[in-house]
Image (cartoon, rainbow, N blue to C red; front, side, top):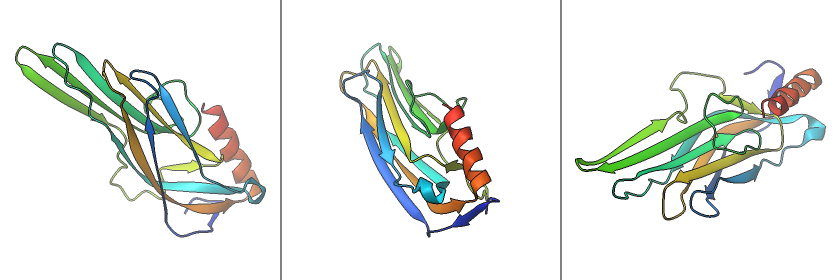
Length: 168
């Protein structure tokens, strides 16, 4: 249990999805956690599952599908190099004379260690972000966050909110 937090719920699963508004256009979906800031309520993320559509197989073309879960609004999908990205996956398909190859870069699966938590969301929402590259149709994906609601003491809550906002 993180210091300064008191659980106020049992395990909760929050699922959502996002689809590009048009092929190749970055699209983000805001997911409301309905936290109560007056009670210093936060959401402690214990695990994240993330899944994106497979990119299209187009002759002699590299196609991609990218998806991330972020704590604050983004203008690109981003990667784990960005402090506000909690999970990220990218699938790349390349077709050539010798056949087709698909590579998956998954940084979104929760570590299999016994961690108390992987992220603490102090603001009222999180974002699913997606963008495809060179696909003829739209791409997208889904994510599920596992965690619990908790009440933070005032100093902890202020520090978590400031840290989350500054990570944008």
